[in-house]
Image (cartoon, rainbow, N blue to C red; front, side, top):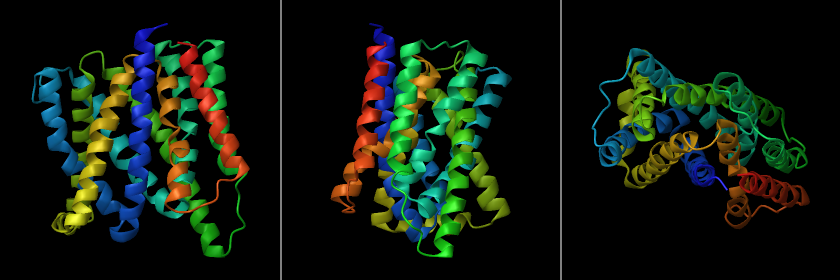
Length: 303
């Protein structure tokens, strides 16, 4: 068995757990203070931690000797991933729900695998393709067969908008990850994440301080201990640990496989829905869970 491939897939599982945790916190805080403020402030909280992690893991505070092409790809990847994609996704969490939004994001592995084949000549064998399709089928089954009658026209409008935001986020996420992988031959996974963070934060600064002029208002969140603690926890788990794990996984396994495993977050959210929100676990949820777990198991067995 390929030990690098196994490690890459394990790191992808860590990433999935981080995204599941993030979706819960960001939805909770987004309803209280707005998704725009949450998305913005968590980038400031994540930056010092990523700088320290870069120095600890790679011995540099900031990569200064990369080619202009690499800086362009990584900064643009961060702007697409951390700013545009996350703003769309955070709003989808509010309009559609955490688990439902993460299900739509399962479109991302398909797009990523296709582009990975054409851009990086990453070929997947038949068993790996079967694992990807099984995982995606399981997650889709969980939501498509759980359809509930909508109670009001506004609810239907919110759901439609949330679906659109989540679909756009899934495509843009794929593009941002592929741009990051394209540039990783010059830099390590942690410094890659640092430059992506800088790219995303730069766009937040332009948008919130120069365009919307509400950046100062967002910083009022740090004066509320409970909100600050949740934001800090989410920032460390998401932009720091989660994204660094994913960038490292990209160096060890094909992007299609890594992205597929990271999309099992809706499965990881089932216990939260059941025991915290007290939602019933339907046959569709159980069947989707078993299918998704089987798909991930196939990917590991194919290593």
